[in-house]
Length: 166
Image (cartoon, rainbow, N blue to C red; front, side, top):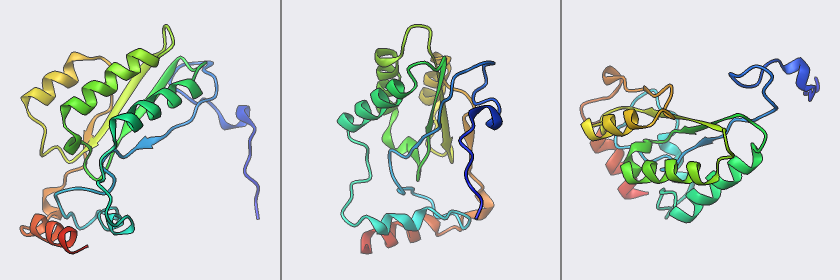
């Protein structure tokens, strides 16, 4: 079996800024596997059955601990990427993401740049979401993974039915 290299220089650039220190990438799933669509291509929807009885919502206390620890671990990084995915992360609501920005501002080191990414199917995005995303320069690379042709007309009902019987 081959070995995993830990040689930082051999790995190449780690961030988008030249000469940036070593960093790592973590993807947060604040709603776990919860989504209201039942896209055929989604491998994650069935994962909710692994955690019976879970609320599948990141608690405020955990949200603060996660952001604080992530930023502490990137103490010397000039740039930190916070990736939000799911299930469907927008189910958490705008207040969750507003608070995330506030916590990033609270725990970021002076001059440290925050980049947030949001992977969403886009069905809950409204003008209010658009205004929020535009209001801060920390949102980058937001993209929709929605593929309407992959969602059956009864997809939402099937997903809801599967959740209610779990």
